[in-house]
Length: 198
Image (cartoon, one colour):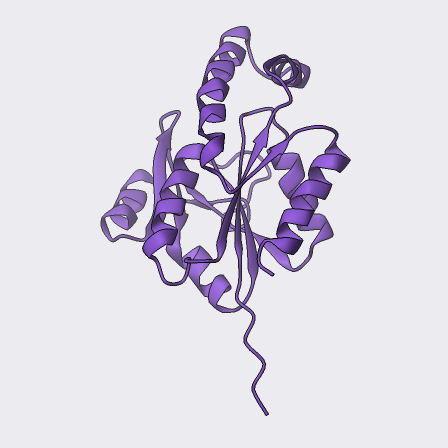
C-alpha cells in the first residue's frame, strides 16, 4: 500500500497599487480560509499603536535588519519611505515544509524578487503563484484613495504615479484580477487558490 503524498504548502503572492483593495482582500482570505496563514514580514519602522511584534511585523532596528541582510536571512528586502522591509526565509520555509499554505501581501519590487528566487529555490519552485489586483480604472483608484481621507493631496498624486508604474508590471504576474466588487474580487482570488495547484 502506497503512502499518501505529503501535502506541500503553497505561497500566494498578492500585489496591487495602494487603494486597489488588496489588503481587504487578503484579510478576507485569511478569515474565510483558516488553512491559509499570513506571512509576517519584517520592518525597521516603529510599531504603531496596537501593533504587536511577530504578529503584525517583525520589528527590527537598522543594525539588526542589516545584519540579517548580510547573513542572507531574507528572500527579499527593500527600502520604502526611509524604512527597510523584508520577508524572512525562516518565516516561509518552516511553514511551507509543514504543508501550510501562505499568503503574502507585498509590493511589485518584492514580488519580482520572490518570483526570481522561486525559479532556483527548491522549496519555492512550483509552489508560488503571483496575483496582481488591477484597478478597474485610474479614476476608480483615485476615488478610493480620496475616499480614505487619510492622505494629503501631494501624497495622493505620488501614489497615483507609483500606481501607474506598478500596473505596467501586472503582465509579469501569473494572474490578474480586474477589480470589481469586493465579493467578485474575493471569488476570483479564492478560485485561484482552489485551482492553481491541482
